[in-house]
Length: 281
Length: 293
Image 1: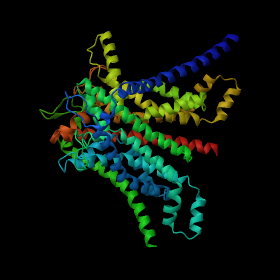
Image 2 (image 1 turned 90 degrees about the horizontal axis):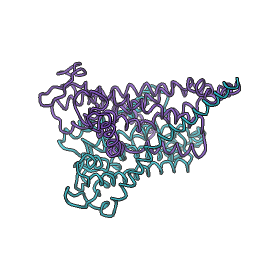
Image 3 (image 1 turned 45 degrees about the vertical axis):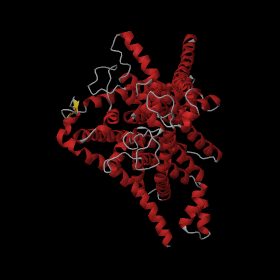
Image 4 (image 1 turned 180 degrees about the horizontal axis):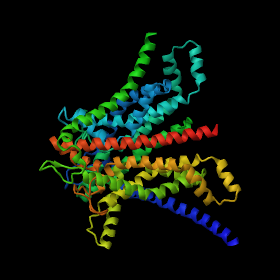
């Protein structure tokens, strides 16, 4: 009796330590990745790295200015394409959420969210690269906006559903038309939630490489033309990492450091907004 | 009244446009892969050679590559993600430790896949190469095992966060009843929590599988880009996603069409996996909310 009890308690303790060990091991990669990025990344970063264009191999120096600008350019481009569209579809789902169409739309959002990014890259290629016979920032922006869309729709819908019904009723009772109630009362109240969703979707696409491989492609020169290939941080990291030159490998770490800072920055701001305005998902 | 109509019309229009977008994506993939479907038909899936020069395209090596990497990756990740789920859902529900672990998992989920690839190239690859030299296989360094390891790291946050949610959903009266009968915590976890949360944990793993199948960049960088049927877990290979990433930009004609055919299959498989996973999770949270009320 006594020994059996001791046995059970022993197993209980053992299991707890086992869980803790497994959890600690699973944190190891994160620590290692952050350590590698900071150690190898910061060493490369200086003013020149941030403000100069890439140089051909053999020439020392150079930077990734075009990739940094290109990444932000692509984010803005895909934001312009997807944000109004996504918010509007999100309003539809929260307002008329019970109909047959809404169910189909919701299913499509789930499917879009799970679609592999490389497949979206192929589709954007078929739509905008193959017909115009050239890689372009526009096609990359479209691929990324398709990836942003489901996140924005979902968060908008969920935020607006949390709005108290009395708010809408009060506005309607005052004789405010329905569309003005939505645009001037409901949307501004849910703004923080929607903003959080947009930032999360931006964080999601900032690091995406696969859809850009055959859309925006890469460009070692500065480019502001949306019909020409454009560089981006993730593409540059891929390009440098796969090259055989050790010097370019260090550049890849530098670019990774910047990319991680940008992505985590977007995530942090999103969380900050969510905490400050008490958004819940 | 007029602006009211326009407003409602615009909402309706954008919602329907989402459906249209998905349909057009499907059609684009389908139409572009027709030449390859016509030439190879279903034997595409059992063909072992992928050779652009002789225009022979069989996708079996990539199907096998995808299956091996994603299942091996999942298998490695499962103990860790279940450990995190139980740790956060049962042992440390709140407090500093829990907050730290939860933000770490979130950070891990936010790191771009290309950076996982880069890290894998400079840390995992030499490690795997060392192991390969020790046990006497050709030391490629890159290959199915390396890709699976990075996939495991990448999907842990995904299945762990879903797992945590379903573990917290286990009704506390069940747990308390077991404790009052003298169960230890381990026995509560084994006999109450795991059976109750089983389908949710399964759904989380299924969604992680969907991600692993579609994951492109990190795998592309670590799998070794070989179009031959893999002979073991150390051999270089290609997955469906990585072969597209490696070859699509230079492909024309029938070889481009065959790559899109692979893309179509990839799209269909991930869609099915995701729909099942989402459906299971929805059902569980519905049941849980019913029990509370």
